[in-house]
Each structure stands twice: as C-alpha cells, then as structure tokens.
Length: 172
Image (cartoon, rainbow, N blue to C red; front, side, top):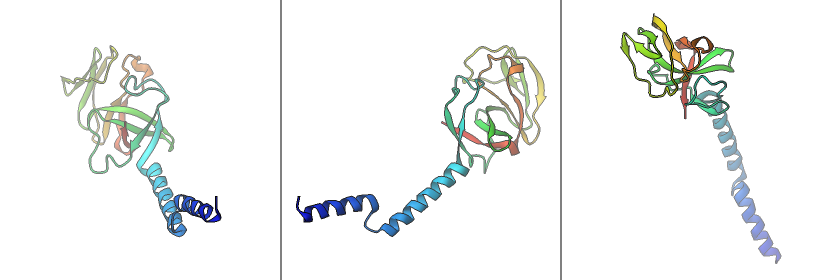
C-alpha cells in the first residue's frame, strides 16, 4: 500500500473512532456517561429477585428495573407490582398491591376480598387456602402480597406498606 492510501485508511479509522472533532466527541462521552449514571441511579433502579414469593410472575435470580418516577403524580393502583424499601438503600421487597388506602382486605379460603366483595386475581396461579380476618388499610398505606400464595401465610411477607417506603413500580 502506498503512503497516501495508508494515511487515508488511518484517517478514516480515526474519524470513526474519535470523530472529526475530538473535543465534541469528549463532550458527548461525558454527557452520555452522566445521563447513564443519573438514569441508573435515580430513575430506573435495578432490582434482583430473591426468593419465591412472586412466582410464577417473577423468577428468582432475575433482574428487573424499578421506575422511580411512576408514582410522582398518583399513587399505586391495585395490581401494580411495586418495590418497597425495607432497610437501608439496598434491601427492598417486590410485592403486588392488592389493597388501597381505606379499603378492608381479607382472605377467605385463598380468595382475596376487598370491602366484602371477592376480587379476581389472574396472576395467582397456584392454589391457596389462606384465611385472614378483615383488616382496614390505613389512609397512607397499601396492602401488598406476593403472587405465590401456595406458601403458608406464616412464611410469606405480606401486609401494610407505608406510602413513603414505596420506591416505585417494577417494570418488565
């Protein structure tokens, strides 16, 4: 190859890797890294599923993301899968909202009852025999439970979640 052809190939490789203006390329890299950090740290928070309480909807060991902005304008709705901060910044539970503020929640022979009426739950795939006396959800609370109701109720973390502990809505 001639020196001119080698120089042209080298200049194209440089343009592809660095761009025609290295200063703007550096600025773009800094902006992209900053935006990626902000999105990963504050907007879409990764969460790893630990345990079997959300089977079969969410499998153990899988990674999902929490939309931290989902509840800025309105609260969680029945059926939403949310992340609840338990202790510190790293320990969170992933549960489904079944009871809204002010409602009365009960379980009879595994069936969810809200305000004295049965509520269909198509996401519950395993048979359940839970019994739970009616309990009123507080004004700033949500009743949350996992999808795997085949577990004994004593082995399952479920109950009231304060609004201030809800981190966001689980995506995917």
